[in-house]
Length: 313
Figure 1 (tube, helix red, strand yellow):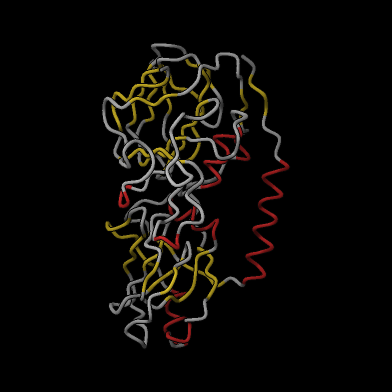
Figure 2 (cartoon, one colour):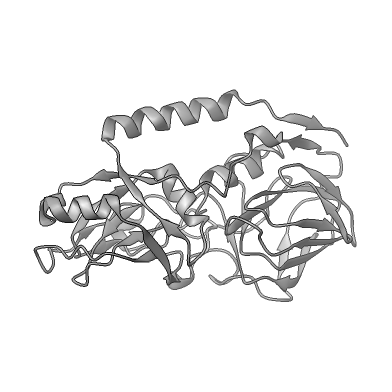
Protein backbone atom coordinates (compact mmCIF):
# COMPACT_ATOMS: atom_id res chain seq x y z
CA UNK A 1 0.00 0.00 0.00
CA UNK A 2 1.29 3.47 -0.85
CA UNK A 3 1.93 6.12 1.76
CA UNK A 4 4.80 7.48 3.84
CA UNK A 5 7.56 5.73 5.75
CA UNK A 6 8.54 7.18 9.14
CA UNK A 7 12.33 7.63 9.12
CA UNK A 8 12.44 9.73 12.30
CA UNK A 9 9.33 10.00 14.49
CA UNK A 10 10.10 13.29 16.24
CA UNK A 11 9.69 13.93 19.94
CA UNK A 12 5.98 13.06 19.89
CA UNK A 13 4.00 12.74 16.67
CA UNK A 14 0.44 11.49 16.89
CA UNK A 15 -2.08 10.39 14.30
CA UNK A 16 -5.27 12.36 14.88
CA UNK A 17 -8.62 13.42 13.55
CA UNK A 18 -10.98 15.87 15.27
CA UNK A 19 -11.48 13.57 18.27
CA UNK A 20 -13.48 10.74 19.79
CA UNK A 21 -16.87 12.28 20.53
CA UNK A 22 -19.67 10.79 22.65
CA UNK A 23 -17.83 8.14 24.68
CA UNK A 24 -17.25 9.81 28.06
CA UNK A 25 -20.01 7.58 29.48
CA UNK A 26 -17.70 4.57 29.12
CA UNK A 27 -14.62 6.45 30.31
CA UNK A 28 -13.03 7.27 26.95
CA UNK A 29 -11.70 10.79 26.59
CA UNK A 30 -11.94 12.94 23.47
CA UNK A 31 -8.33 13.24 22.29
CA UNK A 32 -7.97 15.09 19.01
CA UNK A 33 -5.87 18.11 18.03
CA UNK A 34 -4.74 20.51 20.75
CA UNK A 35 -5.00 23.33 18.20
CA UNK A 36 -8.25 22.60 16.32
CA UNK A 37 -7.97 25.68 14.09
CA UNK A 38 -4.50 24.75 12.80
CA UNK A 39 -5.78 21.19 12.23
CA UNK A 40 -8.82 22.53 10.36
CA UNK A 41 -6.64 24.71 8.13
CA UNK A 42 -4.33 21.79 7.32
CA UNK A 43 -7.27 19.88 5.85
CA UNK A 44 -8.94 22.91 4.28
CA UNK A 45 -5.76 23.90 2.40
CA UNK A 46 -5.86 20.50 0.70
CA UNK A 47 -9.60 20.44 0.05
CA UNK A 48 -10.01 17.51 2.46
CA UNK A 49 -13.09 16.78 4.49
CA UNK A 50 -12.80 18.55 7.89
CA UNK A 51 -12.28 15.32 9.84
CA UNK A 52 -9.59 13.81 7.59
CA UNK A 53 -6.81 12.11 9.54
CA UNK A 54 -3.56 14.10 9.87
CA UNK A 55 -0.48 14.23 12.10
CA UNK A 56 0.04 16.37 15.20
CA UNK A 57 3.78 17.05 15.57
CA UNK A 58 4.87 18.20 19.02
CA UNK A 59 8.05 20.35 19.00
CA UNK A 60 9.30 18.83 15.72
CA UNK A 61 12.10 16.57 14.41
CA UNK A 62 9.81 14.45 12.18
CA UNK A 63 11.25 12.90 9.00
CA UNK A 64 9.10 11.05 6.46
CA UNK A 65 9.87 9.42 3.11
CA UNK A 66 7.16 9.54 0.47
CA UNK A 67 6.19 6.29 -1.23
CA UNK A 68 3.36 7.99 -3.10
CA UNK A 69 2.76 10.99 -5.37
CA UNK A 70 0.50 13.37 -3.48
CA UNK A 71 0.19 16.83 -1.88
CA UNK A 72 0.83 17.85 1.70
CA UNK A 73 0.68 20.91 3.92
CA UNK A 74 2.14 21.88 7.31
CA UNK A 75 0.28 24.33 9.57
CA UNK A 76 0.48 25.29 13.23
CA UNK A 77 3.62 26.34 15.09
CA UNK A 78 6.72 27.56 13.33
CA UNK A 79 8.24 24.17 12.48
CA UNK A 80 10.56 24.61 9.48
CA UNK A 81 9.37 22.46 6.56
CA UNK A 82 11.92 20.98 4.17
CA UNK A 83 11.35 18.79 1.12
CA UNK A 84 14.54 17.13 -0.15
CA UNK A 85 16.57 19.58 1.94
CA UNK A 86 14.93 22.70 0.49
CA UNK A 87 13.00 24.90 2.90
CA UNK A 88 9.36 25.29 1.85
CA UNK A 89 6.54 27.57 2.92
CA UNK A 90 4.28 26.44 5.71
CA UNK A 91 0.51 27.02 5.42
CA UNK A 92 0.80 26.11 1.72
CA UNK A 93 0.12 22.91 -0.20
CA UNK A 94 3.14 21.27 -1.87
CA UNK A 95 3.38 18.35 -4.25
CA UNK A 96 5.62 15.46 -3.20
CA UNK A 97 6.72 12.47 -5.24
CA UNK A 98 7.87 8.95 -4.52
CA UNK A 99 11.26 9.05 -2.78
CA UNK A 100 10.96 12.63 -1.48
CA UNK A 101 12.23 13.32 2.04
CA UNK A 102 9.97 15.50 4.16
CA UNK A 103 11.31 17.10 7.34
CA UNK A 104 9.52 19.11 10.03
CA UNK A 105 12.28 20.70 12.12
CA UNK A 106 12.27 22.00 15.66
CA UNK A 107 9.72 24.74 16.31
CA UNK A 108 10.79 28.37 16.57
CA UNK A 109 7.44 29.39 18.14
CA UNK A 110 4.40 27.30 18.99
CA UNK A 111 4.56 23.73 20.26
CA UNK A 112 2.36 21.86 17.73
CA UNK A 113 2.37 21.51 13.98
CA UNK A 114 -0.18 19.70 11.79
CA UNK A 115 0.82 17.79 8.67
CA UNK A 116 -1.97 16.69 6.35
CA UNK A 117 -1.98 14.90 2.99
CA UNK A 118 -4.54 14.93 0.18
CA UNK A 119 -7.47 12.75 1.20
CA UNK A 120 -6.03 12.17 4.68
CA UNK A 121 -4.09 9.21 6.04
CA UNK A 122 -5.93 5.90 5.71
CA UNK A 123 -6.12 4.77 9.34
CA UNK A 124 -8.90 2.49 10.67
CA UNK A 125 -11.01 4.27 13.34
CA UNK A 126 -11.40 2.98 16.89
CA UNK A 127 -14.64 3.93 18.64
CA UNK A 128 -15.40 6.20 15.70
CA UNK A 129 -12.09 8.07 15.62
CA UNK A 130 -8.46 7.70 14.55
CA UNK A 131 -7.23 10.09 17.27
CA UNK A 132 -4.37 8.64 19.29
CA UNK A 133 -4.74 8.67 23.08
CA UNK A 134 -1.66 6.98 24.50
CA UNK A 135 -3.03 6.66 28.04
CA UNK A 136 -5.96 4.62 26.71
CA UNK A 137 -3.91 2.89 23.99
CA UNK A 138 -6.53 3.85 21.40
CA UNK A 139 -6.37 5.23 17.88
CA UNK A 140 -3.47 5.78 15.50
CA UNK A 141 -1.14 2.81 15.09
CA UNK A 142 -1.58 0.56 18.13
CA UNK A 143 -2.58 3.51 20.29
CA UNK A 144 0.94 4.91 20.46
CA UNK A 145 2.96 7.81 19.11
CA UNK A 146 4.79 7.25 15.82
CA UNK A 147 7.89 5.04 15.83
CA UNK A 148 10.73 4.73 13.34
CA UNK A 149 9.73 2.26 10.65
CA UNK A 150 6.00 2.94 10.90
CA UNK A 151 4.09 3.24 7.65
CA UNK A 152 1.39 5.84 7.08
CA UNK A 153 -0.91 4.68 4.27
CA UNK A 154 -2.66 7.17 2.00
CA UNK A 155 -3.99 7.27 -1.55
CA UNK A 156 -2.11 8.61 -4.55
CA UNK A 157 -3.27 12.11 -5.51
CA UNK A 158 -0.68 13.66 -7.87
CA UNK A 159 -3.15 16.13 -9.40
CA UNK A 160 -5.02 17.15 -6.26
CA UNK A 161 -3.58 20.64 -5.93
CA UNK A 162 -4.35 22.77 -2.91
CA UNK A 163 -4.21 26.25 -1.44
CA UNK A 164 -2.03 28.63 0.55
CA UNK A 165 -3.04 30.89 3.40
CA UNK A 166 -1.53 34.40 3.14
CA UNK A 167 0.61 35.46 6.10
CA UNK A 168 -1.83 38.10 7.46
CA UNK A 169 -4.35 35.34 8.19
CA UNK A 170 -1.91 32.99 9.89
CA UNK A 171 -2.04 32.78 13.71
CA UNK A 172 0.54 34.60 15.81
CA UNK A 173 2.08 32.00 18.10
CA UNK A 174 4.07 34.67 19.94
CA UNK A 175 0.87 36.26 21.29
CA UNK A 176 1.20 36.87 25.04
CA UNK A 177 -2.27 38.40 25.68
CA UNK A 178 -4.00 37.20 28.87
CA UNK A 179 -5.99 33.97 28.57
CA UNK A 180 -9.74 34.38 29.02
CA UNK A 181 -11.49 32.42 31.79
CA UNK A 182 -15.23 31.83 32.30
CA UNK A 183 -15.84 31.43 36.04
CA UNK A 184 -17.78 28.28 36.95
CA UNK A 185 -20.36 27.33 39.55
CA UNK A 186 -17.63 26.16 41.96
CA UNK A 187 -16.06 29.62 42.10
CA UNK A 188 -17.51 30.03 45.62
CA UNK A 189 -14.85 27.59 46.83
CA UNK A 190 -12.42 30.46 46.24
CA UNK A 191 -12.54 33.74 48.16
CA UNK A 192 -12.74 37.13 46.46
CA UNK A 193 -9.09 37.67 47.42
CA UNK A 194 -8.04 34.37 45.84
CA UNK A 195 -9.92 35.16 42.62
CA UNK A 196 -8.32 38.58 42.49
CA UNK A 197 -4.91 37.00 43.07
CA UNK A 198 -5.56 34.50 40.24
CA UNK A 199 -6.51 37.22 37.76
CA UNK A 200 -3.70 39.64 38.66
CA UNK A 201 -0.77 37.22 38.88
CA UNK A 202 1.53 35.54 36.41
CA UNK A 203 1.83 31.76 36.28
CA UNK A 204 4.56 29.64 34.74
CA UNK A 205 3.81 26.52 32.69
CA UNK A 206 5.61 23.76 34.57
CA UNK A 207 7.62 20.90 33.11
CA UNK A 208 4.68 18.64 34.00
CA UNK A 209 2.64 19.83 31.04
CA UNK A 210 1.25 17.28 28.61
CA UNK A 211 -1.84 16.45 26.57
CA UNK A 212 -3.80 15.62 29.73
CA UNK A 213 -3.24 19.00 31.33
CA UNK A 214 -0.96 21.98 31.83
CA UNK A 215 0.19 22.28 35.44
CA UNK A 216 0.96 25.84 36.44
CA UNK A 217 3.32 27.30 39.03
CA UNK A 218 2.61 30.61 40.76
CA UNK A 219 0.65 32.17 43.62
CA UNK A 220 -1.33 29.43 45.38
CA UNK A 221 -5.13 29.73 45.52
CA UNK A 222 -6.10 26.70 47.65
CA UNK A 223 -9.87 26.08 47.65
CA UNK A 224 -11.87 26.20 50.86
CA UNK A 225 -12.93 22.57 50.34
CA UNK A 226 -10.62 19.57 50.01
CA UNK A 227 -12.56 17.91 47.25
CA UNK A 228 -15.95 17.27 45.70
CA UNK A 229 -17.86 14.25 44.50
CA UNK A 230 -16.30 13.14 41.22
CA UNK A 231 -18.07 14.66 38.23
CA UNK A 232 -17.62 15.02 34.49
CA UNK A 233 -14.84 17.39 33.44
CA UNK A 234 -15.16 19.72 30.46
CA UNK A 235 -12.37 20.62 28.08
CA UNK A 236 -10.42 23.60 29.46
CA UNK A 237 -11.55 23.16 33.07
CA UNK A 238 -9.15 24.77 35.56
CA UNK A 239 -9.05 22.49 38.56
CA UNK A 240 -7.22 23.44 41.75
CA UNK A 241 -5.98 20.72 44.12
CA UNK A 242 -5.19 21.33 47.78
CA UNK A 243 -1.74 22.79 47.02
CA UNK A 244 -3.45 25.70 45.25
CA UNK A 245 -1.55 25.31 41.96
CA UNK A 246 -4.01 25.40 39.00
CA UNK A 247 -4.15 22.67 36.35
CA UNK A 248 -5.73 23.45 32.97
CA UNK A 249 -7.20 20.23 31.56
CA UNK A 250 -6.70 19.42 27.88
CA UNK A 251 -7.91 16.88 25.31
CA UNK A 252 -6.53 13.72 26.92
CA UNK A 253 -7.90 14.58 30.39
CA UNK A 254 -9.64 12.01 32.57
CA UNK A 255 -13.40 12.01 32.08
CA UNK A 256 -14.27 12.55 35.77
CA UNK A 257 -12.50 14.21 38.68
CA UNK A 258 -12.98 15.50 42.22
CA UNK A 259 -10.96 18.70 42.49
CA UNK A 260 -12.78 22.04 42.72
CA UNK A 261 -12.66 24.10 39.53
CA UNK A 262 -12.43 27.88 39.50
CA UNK A 263 -13.67 28.04 35.90
CA UNK A 264 -12.86 27.06 32.33
CA UNK A 265 -10.55 28.54 29.73
CA UNK A 266 -12.22 29.98 26.60
CA UNK A 267 -11.83 27.26 23.96
CA UNK A 268 -9.79 29.29 21.48
CA UNK A 269 -7.45 30.51 24.21
CA UNK A 270 -7.06 26.89 25.26
CA UNK A 271 -5.58 26.17 21.83
CA UNK A 272 -3.26 29.14 22.29
CA UNK A 273 -2.15 27.76 25.67
CA UNK A 274 -1.48 24.34 24.12
CA UNK A 275 0.89 26.01 21.65
CA UNK A 276 3.03 27.32 24.54
CA UNK A 277 6.10 25.53 25.87
CA UNK A 278 7.00 24.76 29.50
CA UNK A 279 8.56 27.79 31.14
CA UNK A 280 6.26 30.28 29.41
CA UNK A 281 4.74 32.96 31.67
CA UNK A 282 0.97 33.38 31.30
CA UNK A 283 -1.82 35.41 32.89
CA UNK A 284 -5.61 35.25 33.00
CA UNK A 285 -8.52 37.64 32.62
CA UNK A 286 -12.24 37.06 33.37
CA UNK A 287 -14.64 36.47 30.48
CA UNK A 288 -18.41 36.01 30.55
CA UNK A 289 -20.40 33.25 28.87
CA UNK A 290 -22.09 35.79 26.61
CA UNK A 291 -18.72 37.24 25.57
CA UNK A 292 -17.44 33.72 24.89
CA UNK A 293 -20.44 32.81 22.73
CA UNK A 294 -20.18 36.03 20.74
CA UNK A 295 -16.43 35.72 20.23
CA UNK A 296 -16.71 32.10 19.15
CA UNK A 297 -19.36 32.95 16.55
CA UNK A 298 -17.28 35.87 15.27
CA UNK A 299 -14.20 33.68 14.97
CA UNK A 300 -16.12 30.97 13.13
CA UNK A 301 -17.55 33.57 10.75
CA UNK A 302 -14.10 35.02 10.17
CA UNK A 303 -12.69 31.56 9.37
CA UNK A 304 -15.45 30.85 6.85
CA UNK A 305 -14.97 34.20 5.10
CA UNK A 306 -11.24 33.77 4.46
CA UNK A 307 -10.51 32.75 0.88
CA UNK A 308 -7.18 30.91 0.57
CA UNK A 309 -5.26 31.22 -2.71
CA UNK A 310 -5.22 28.23 -5.08
CA UNK A 311 -1.95 26.40 -5.76
CA UNK A 312 -2.20 24.54 -9.06
CA UNK A 313 -0.47 21.24 -9.91
